[in-house]
Length: 224
Image (cartoon, rainbow, N blue to C red; front, side, top):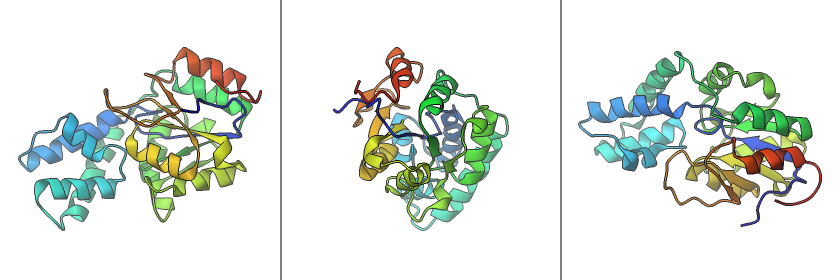
């Protein structure tokens, strides 16, 4: 564990389940699809799909349902259901706006999300966070989304920052794998309680006192 450097050159945030409380939207949609195929939906099933792209989550569902080749059909249904749930609005998670504002005052920031552009924009707008970010990157804008490093490498390049001197904020194993592959430090607030996740910093929320103190010290070159 390296802890988080206050000399970071950039900070890159995941969106779903980290900045914005969209996981409830995804869970409602996923539960309905599992039920339609005669399956219950709990923590074990959530772990199969959390953090994945719509397409990857749908393929995992198709495998689980014993329906090889049904991925595209399930993906279309999943996207439609999540779109409907998001239309009702999603709130920023506790501490998200404050942390984003503090980081932006010190270093360049961006969002790197495994959601498609349509859902990413809707989530950020709904939570009142869109205006904080001049750079955001969605799964349908790279050749290989998370867990590949492409989104994080693209974000760091756009921000003019070295990945090895940048910090990623994530909530899932899929996102953490992407950030690690790109070489970033990783701060983790798990969406699933009890998950054993790789991290440099681990907390229960973006409003954690340690994160607030760290963000205020960004730019001084030390390590917390």
